[in-house]
Image (cartoon, rainbow, N blue to C red; front, side, top):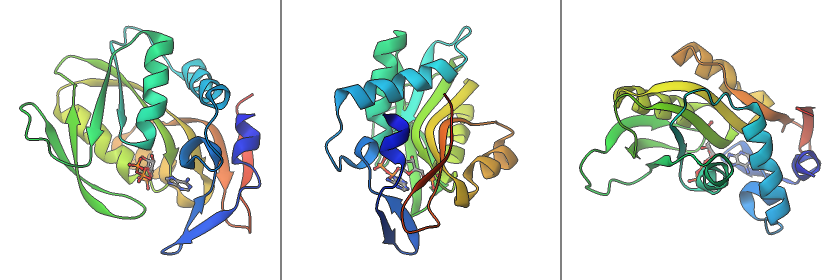
Length: 188
Ligand SMILES: O=P(O)(O)OC[C@H]1O[C@H](OP(=O)(O)OP(=O)(O)O)[C@H](O)[C@@H]1O
Ligand SMILES: Nc1ncnc2[nH]cnc12
């Protein structure tokens, strides 16, 4: 079901970047609980959870998945926001992603935490690099990073590895260079 939902989807060109019109991240068509559950279960299967005390993700599409992974694992979660709330304890880090750049504001991560990062999609890897920087700035340790999908042509996984030393695992890799999306690899 998950593999099928990312395969043969329409692609929408936004400033030269190919956006996958799909059920899990874009609600086209509406996300079913069965698909969301399968995506979260696949992420949990890949996650190394030894002595981990927290999940970290980013709003807003990623947060839907993080919430379900939290329910499945019983672990609390922190989130990076795109706007400052003015709350004390927010960690601020610059980011640059596929469509824009700016800052992220991380809540809920403390020094000494052992965290796993969960996200829906990796494109350029810019958001993930900023999230990793913010978590390290908070004094927490990153034990594992899992995303549902990576877009093959954008080199995000390699960029994250080069910038942070971290290997990101994904459930699937999807190509966006044709007329439609094509799932190139899927973790059975
Ligand atoms: O690898 P990158 O180039 O950084 O892109 C990946 C990011 O883009 C998506 O979020 P999006 O920017 O669509 O924001 P949203 O989750 O707030 O809708 C996705 O959830 C990732 O966080
Ligand atoms: N649905 C999507 N398709 C392609 N790239 C994305 N980046 C974030 N959401 C995406």
